[in-house]
Image (cartoon, rainbow, N blue to C red; front, top):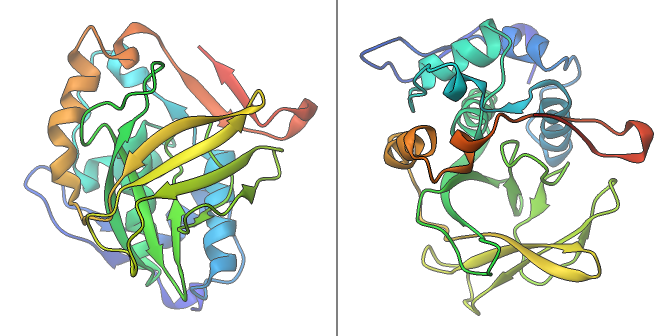
Length: 244
């Protein structure tokens, strides 16, 4: 798809602020200037570009600014204000960009793993399924997560440039159905560590509103307990630089 042919794509309007996708402004925000033909190569390039330019951060929570699952407000914050955000904002905005570039995608709800190995509640995290010739998992909003999209395929060990190894586990269902439970794991310190679990049931951005409110108001949320700001980098042999 020719970048010059996409000046702007109007997305779904909302009562508080119209969501107008200015594709070129978004691409300038993530410093991407190459081909826009929908493909796995484009998905990888956009995924990496996003992680290297848009920080994972929760600063608005500590500034007392409400975060709303509203596509227009999210796009304005990330593209126009050149800010970052947490999962609902980052993956919500990335989904809007990919949709404007004619990718087929689905918003998925994740339950994040706790230290004891159990999982948190539904809608704890937002991730993305991208359907090309095969399905992919994309996530630019998990903080210290994977650098490039992962094949949505069970038990396949997938290497990242950072040296991490990821895999997806699942219940045995063929073909994959919306109620199949997937688990994302990463090899860390010689053992597999759970990251989050999800099904393939399609979700809407508004479905995450309750947990988005919880994470910015509850004293039990780790987002209210500390300030976080991280950005992907491959300098000094480390994938992420974190400021908190």
